[in-house]
Length: 549
Image 1 (cartoon, rainbow, N blue to C red):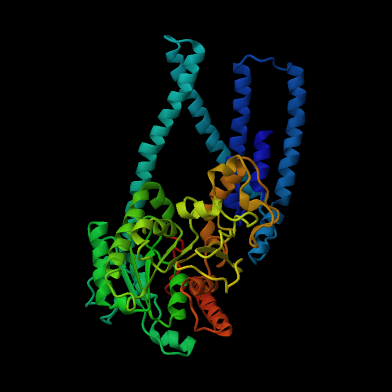
Image 2 (image 1 turned 135 degrees about the vertical axis):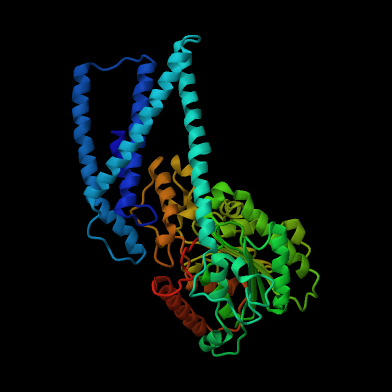
């Protein structure tokens, strides 16, 4: 009964549309959890020697339960397509005609069978250990010790053997991918570009994501063609993981390269913390470079080969260490410059980059000479500052788009911009969090297993299905799966941030004043069209490949 209820709940919608493969795997896993909970309850009842129903009563109850379970499963499978279409509708995706119920059931059955075998293997090991322990201690105590010992054994094998082997294989794979050259991105010939012959950073040491960031930047001519005004070539500095042995040495190299390219003579200077693989979202950097007519310098430093989830799991300290080292070098030099001649200094990061960028600047270090602000997009649910501000939001403001105090220091924005009027006054520092209500990487929480999250309360975000409901344990697992596929949504939803929304965010953060509303609208159209074309063009170099990092 519990397995069937968990199975049905797993088919209901959450934040991201699911394929029949992910739907089946999730439903099978949830069925196994419900089944395990039922078995555990039955074993506990028997273990406590509580009264049990007669054989006839059990037969009748089992028949009724089987019929009810079958009905629940059939009804849930019949509604699955409508549930998935409720998500697709808010994301402006074409509806699906079927959710492939037979395929979902087949995959769910295979998933359940695998988990059932593992569960029974665990039970056998626990029974074996308990049986040998009963010789010296009481039976009930021995059973408990057997379960604990089996749990420790399975955990040790999983974490120290399987996980470590998987990590080594993935690390090697990502490392090989990082050094692979892409012929469509030749080495720059201009001396003012990172990776050129005159650069302090060698082209081959930039890594795949560094070469992608440097090669995908717009030129002054391209910017002028859109804005109709004079422009400069933006300065982009990137230091790959293989350039130096330590984070401090790479940060020093980044500072030297930024000074070589006269980055401190620009109007705007942005310290970027990339995602796990070193990827930087073109949507974020193209927009700010266009808005400031190329008078922008940006600097970034790679800290991992792994993608963001793996980097966070296996190397959580690397990103924070690298972000801190780079900011310390840049900020330390920036503070020595005359205040009326130095650029405005900003921070930026997407996803894991946002979380690590939060950690890069110390309040007491910068309070005497503060930076101008920060734009953090898709901040993960474990981001400390984001979590603190969201939890302390003004009463009545939604968790998916909070308002914080008088909004002079920090504002939240989504597809529709902020809830605060654009002409509302800012303080000396401007911080904007760009986030979508459909981004599970931002809104996942472990406590979703036992209580409904605040962002589910009405009113909901514009990109969240009205059919979404909370179920104990299941909702947390659904959102965990949503995190894994959050970068596979259309641009402007999930964890895929669109240029149009970055435009509004950068206008607010960097105090853009010389653009009319019509010009801003034209820029949004141009950048949005170009980004979607680049992301969907399989024939050419895709700066959005591996998006999300």
